[in-house]
Amino acid sequence: MGDRVENLTIGAFAQACGVNVETVRYYQRRGLLSEPRKPLGGIRRYGESDVARVRFIKTAQRLGFTLDEVALLLKLDDGTHCSEAAAVAQHKLAEVRARLADLRRMERVLTDLVARCRKARGNVSCPLISSLHSASPGPGESR
Image 1 (cartoon, rainbow, N blue to C red):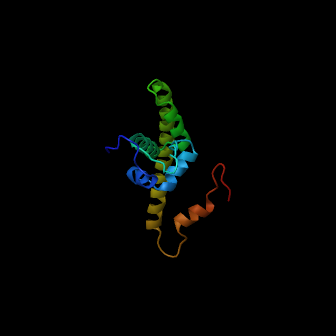
Image 2 (image 1 turned 90 degrees about the vertical axis):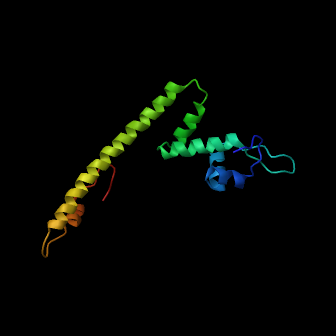
Image 3 (image 1 turned 135 degrees about the vertical axis):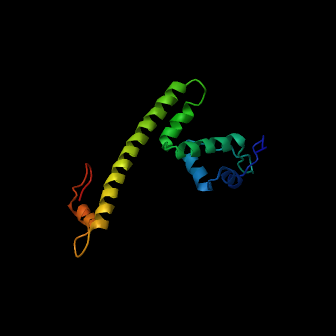
């Protein structure tokens, strides 16, 4: 990027990060990103390290980490906490695998229901709609 000194306004900074200005402000309120000092009569300026930090946050989010988890990872980013960071990632991996299992189950059920709908002929109730009417709610759900 080439800006060794802090020379990006918040708008240019947000654009360089691929986010909007409100996202930058939100990250600042959450403590994920520090707010640069404002020189007397001037405007705050952001630099390369700020861009790298926002990119880290966005990459972690794309991997499914929540902002709370991202904050924890940022605190562990000093080169001496690899095992703690790995534990956070291991927990996230377990969550991802559980979601994948749920998605596979949903795929099996929907595949079966679509096949049953295609076989239904004449003036009969749609198997998909009937199944949704007769299904009982899952844990924590209400009808």
